[in-house]
Image (cartoon, rainbow, N blue to C red; front, side, top):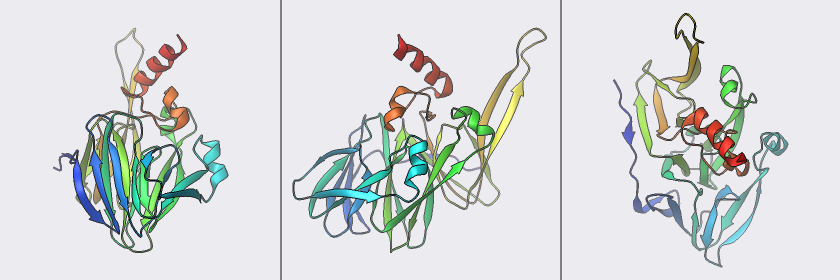
Length: 256
């Protein structure tokens, strides 16, 4: 049976798809890129610092209006030129680079993306169903990144620590709905629901999880993140620890 394995927490002088990068910091990690010929794009609010010779401009998104309705940015930002630039998601966690061979894709939960090389194309889909109960009744988005123009890199932020499990064909793992970060397109996902009886005169409890079926990789974060349950989510850059209950408690404290 496959067991999730911890990603490296720091990397130095890694080169792939035309960029050299470093993953630095233990609590709130930073992605530090050395740009040369390959531009990168990123969500506009994650830029931490850059050299003046690195130019920043707007990169339009397809279906931007749909993403506005979900409270997400309608544009991404692109960095070009030679120099250094760094990004941070302003949340405790861990960064992970996903190297994509030409034609390969990866599915990513919304609010986990940090940056990608220009060679990677971006699309998205909205997920509905029973799991909507955990996402303020509106569902959530899965971003898909594809290395359509040669090899590419996608950098993601996971809350807490980030693990990866590789499932064999037909092998399954159940993950708390706020606990997964990414998956290979070959991995299917369905929502499971279980009701508990707590006694004759007590109310019943219930639990949800996402069941993933291989073959392929699944990324898992140790700090649950449920979009829409915390104040930081309004700027699409914060996590709510402790899953749904933690989000409810957090919102009550913010009102106090």
